[in-house]
Length: 199
Ligand SMILES: [Fe+2]
Image 1 (cartoon, protein in one colour):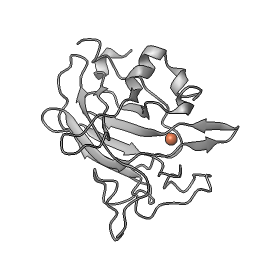
Image 2: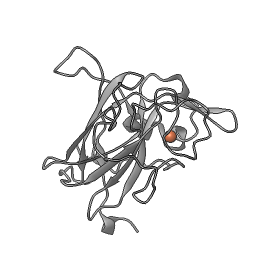
Image 3: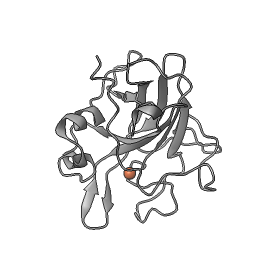
Image 4: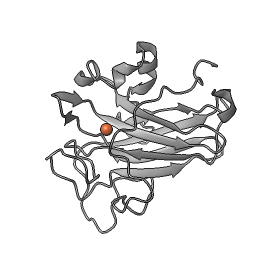
């Protein structure tokens, strides 16, 4: 059990995070990225549910942690103005979300499975969701969640910047949701490290 709660392997933030001062950050900030104020359609792509538990290194729940996610749409395009990908934006997809953990450390999001996208230099990033987790007295965790079975996982420069054992913690297999027969539930647990533990 102790191993499960070792700090989640960090990953690069990348250029498309929308901070609270960025005017392009969508509002409201909430946990359903398929609900865009004023939009009437549903986003392209497969609906997925992403949930998980935020813990400290001793596997205790971190309640009240703020979990931010951001991701490309189904065509591989971010809402961030600096995204050079010419793929179309999706007016029905928020692209950014935030959720606070409950007393058990649990967060959850409704979103869509992101598309892969090209990076200058001829490299293709596999589908992934960026995470930033702020947990009070804990170090802020910045990482990325990946999807099992994606061909570009194998040669992705960022995913392969961590060991194979660490990659296993970042690559998630879908599970069936109890409410439906769809295998679209991804459980991504995040373990934070206390401030004083890092030198
Ligand atoms: Fe990305």
